[in-house]
Length: 87
Image 1 (cartoon, rainbow, N blue to C red):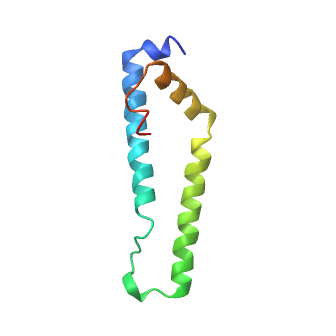
Image 2 (spheres, helix red, strand yellow):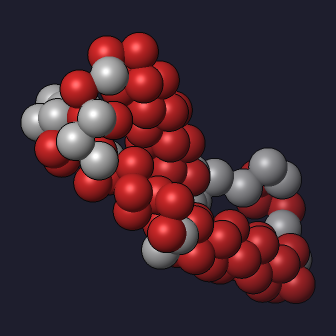
């Protein structure tokens, strides 16, 4: 961890990855009410929309618990990365 937290190239790649993940998560969360079919949705369309949304959020939740992600966070914490706060 100590070596990784001082490797500037590795830190840049990890920070770029965290920035990308942060944008993806923000987009997913902010699109909660976006429905492509407008007002012509049936109740079944609405149910399908929320089931899909729930499945997407479950995937994100599982990935946030991944051991590899925890290691990345640990490296960025040791390096005092400014990008970690937004993540």
